[in-house]
Image (tube, rainbow, N blue to C red; front, side, top):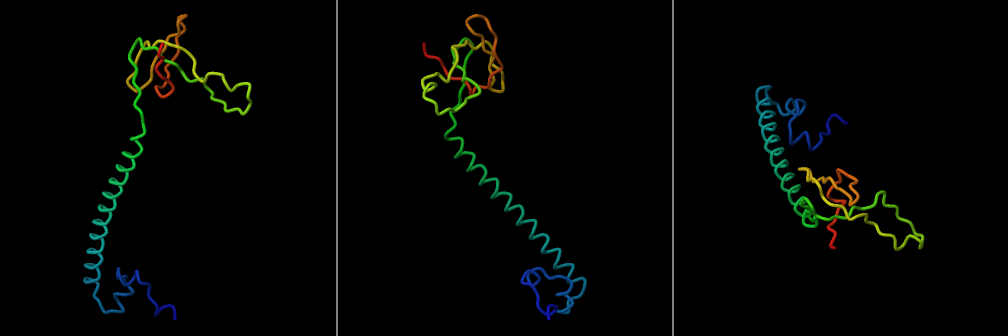
Length: 136
């Protein structure tokens, strides 16, 4: 009983069993299979293009909220205290989350900065996302 029932997928892409049932020759079946493979390649390319468009759209949406931060040499900056520990105690409520000010000594190409404290202590490299300008 199961052998007489065929899946819809087998009707769309004829398998050897369907080809035998419909009386197709091997050459005709091979031609049909090659045509289906070519169509599949086209569908894969279309899917890849849609995926790339979708990823570009998501990237644009995400990058709208990103604020680029760049600092020049000799800028005064503050550095986030790490590790940032979130506590629910009231005694640490007014403690600053930032250390500094520090002077930017060197700017690396990947967004990192070497910092120097007023006493000459060198700090770094520090990622730019952990810095903000100090307005004196």
